[in-house]
Length: 469
Image 1 (cartoon, rainbow, N blue to C red):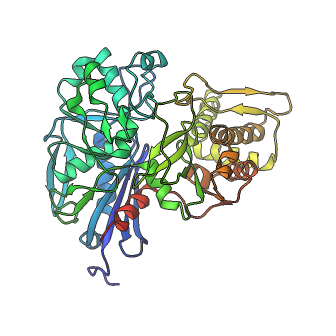
Image 2 (cartoon, rainbow, N blue to C red):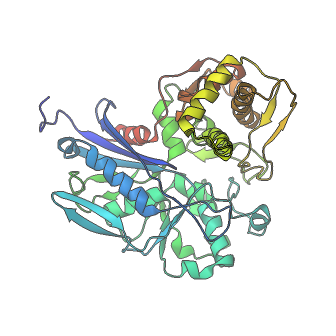
Image 3 (cartoon, one colour):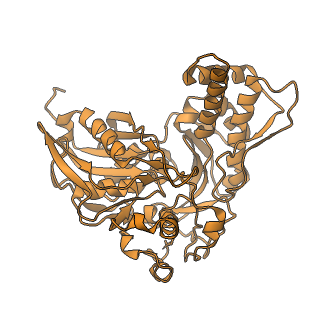
C-alpha cells in the first residue's frame, strides 16, 4: 500500500504505564495491530513527603505520549476513528479545571503540554500507613482501601499538607487527565473501573460515597463524574498529531481490565500477567455479585470489568519489580567492590545461572513491597545453607517465590472450581524470563499458553473497536 492511502479505519490505543507509554494503531474491522510505538517515561521524581512516596512528573509522561503518537504514520493517524486510553490504576493527579494544559502548534503538529499540574502520586505510593488507613471512615463498597488509592491520598493531604490541595479544582488518574485534555473538557469524566480503583465508590449503585466523604471533610468537588466503562467521554478538541478534530475518545479505562481483554480468548481462560507487578485474573459469570462490605485481609479483589461483569483478581505488588531490585542490589554490591558491570549483563547472567540450577531448597518470600492485604508482610529467606547461596539458587528461588506468592492469593484449586481450563501467560517480565516460565508451568495443574501477550494499549483499542456500530 502506498504511503498516503488508507485502506481502512483505525482505532488508536494508548496505555500510560508505570514506566513506559505505548501507542498502537488497530484496524477497526479486524483488530489487527498495524503499528506500535513505546517510549520510556523516566518520570520518577523525588518527593519531600517521605521515603515511602512514589511520584512521577506528569509532564514527562505526556512528553513520552507525544513522542509515541508523532512516530506513528501520520497518514494512518488521519484515518483514526476512535481513541482509547488506559493507564496505571489507583493513582491521582491534580489540576485546575479548564486550565490543565496549553495546546501548541509546532510546524504542522498540534499537541498539548501540562500547565500547573501536580505530580502524579502513583499506585506504588506508600505514604498511607496501616494506622492512617484505619483512621479513615469505612467505605460503602466491596473494595478495601489501600495506600496509593486516589481518595486515600487526598485524605493524606488533607491531614498532613492541606495547602497542597488549595490550587486545584480537578483530579483524576493520569489517563483521565489525558482524556480530559484531549477533549478540552472543563472537568474530567471517569469510568467505573477507575472510580472503583480510587476507593469510596459503590459499584452496585455506580456512585461515590459522597455523604460519607462529605462528613469526613473530603473535598467532594474533586470527584469526577462517573460513566460506564467502554462508553465515549467526548471528542478531540483539536487536531492532534494528525488525528482529526472531533474524533470520539473513550472514557479512560484501567490497565488491568484492558490487559485481560487483550488476551482472554475464551471465557474459561485465566490471565497471568507478570510485568512490573503481577496479576492473576479470570472473568466471573454475569450473575455474580461482590460481597456487601470489604475484607481488608482478603488477597482477592473483584474489579468491575465490562457490561456489569466482574473480574476476580489477585493483584500482587511484587512482580518484575522484585527482580529489578535484586539486579540493582547485585549491581551496587559489585560497584562497591570496585568493579563495573551493567544491569542488563547481571540480569542475563543471573537467569542463565538459574537455568543451570534446575531446582533449589532455598525458600524466598519476595514480598519486599508488601501487599495491599498485608502491607507489613515483607520479604524473607529461609532454609539457607552453605550449599544453596549461589547466584543460580538465589535467582531460581526468587522466581519461584514470585509465582508462589501469587498462587497463595488465588490458588489453582479455586481456578479449577470456577471452570478455568487454561492459563494465558503474559507480561514483559514473564515473556523474557525462562526461569519464571518454568516455575509457572511447575506450579499450575492447568495448561499454560503463551504467544498472546497482554497489552493494555491493544486491549483498550479492541474495546473501542468492538463497540463501533
